[in-house]
Amino acid sequence: MAGVEGRVVVVTGAGGGLGEAYAQLLAGEGAKVVVNDLGGARDGTGSGTSMADDVVAKIRAGGGEAVANYDSVATAEGAAGVVRTALDHFGQVDGVVNNAGILRDKAFHKMTDTEWEAVMQVHLFGGFHVTRAAWPHFREQGRGRVVMAASTSGIYGNFGQANYGAAKAGLIGLVNTLAIEGRKYGILANAVAPMAATRMTEDVAPPELLSKLSPAHVAPVVAHLLSDECTDTGSVIVAGGGQVHRTQYFQSKGVQRRAHGR
Ligand code: NAI
Image (cartoon, rainbow, N blue to C red; front, top):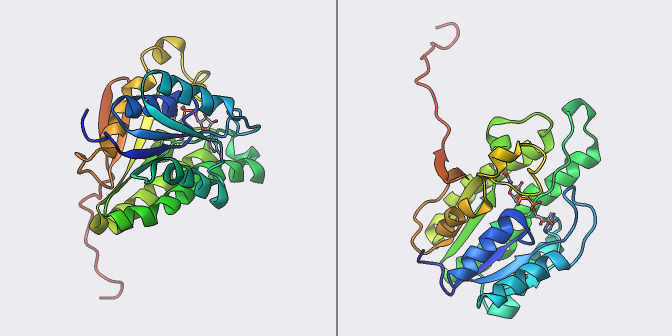
């Protein structure tokens, strides 16, 4: 895959799962990668440095360039720290992959404010904060790439995921506007709704299905969206198990009605 060599890419939540696969592929293709991860549990509790450090060590052992960052994307300060790591270590930032994520699943009638807010903070606010921190640099250099981790839960809904689905749909809404505002500055923004076997999905699908859903199937899609060759913007791509689809809304032909009283 061409087009990411020498580019500096931030991958949030890259200490495992899909983010690790993205970071590994990008570094293997010659990108310089900021491996961000808060290092907590699946529900977002706790923190630590070992997840990001382990991925950086693996990338460096393979001859790639990477640096770790442990900030939380859920705050503006944390997100600024993530982008600052790219600037301090590699002197620029060319792309951000807003991949960090947590789950706090609960049926809507039982969902607490805390469960709603925690998921919004990491996914929707995290995507906003990190992208906003990188955006002035993208505009100045006349080039940038944004990839948001969306989800079919945001596109179609899913039981127990009112918080998560709303956050993921929000990221698609954000991408739509970033694509419009970024176009004249050479900034492309797209969303990927992945399907992959990770700690996030280990108990939601049967093992025989998960065995076909390696994160490595999704990584080339994300790498393409970050590459110089990419021309897509404002797209929502569903990717998993080797399948890649574009998802779009459509408006029906509709009917023409007369205004009331005419
Ligand atoms: P994962 O749990 O392996 O990865 C998420 C990573 O984000 C973890 O390493 C975690 O430590 C990190 N993280 C959590 N909160 C953070 C914060 N505040 N700041 C920085 N890092 C933080 O899960 P997976 O499956 O790799 O998910 C990656 C992304 O893809 C998530 O946004 C998820 O919602 C999305 N996704 C995954 C699907 C799948 O099939 N695995 C399906 C649809 C969406």
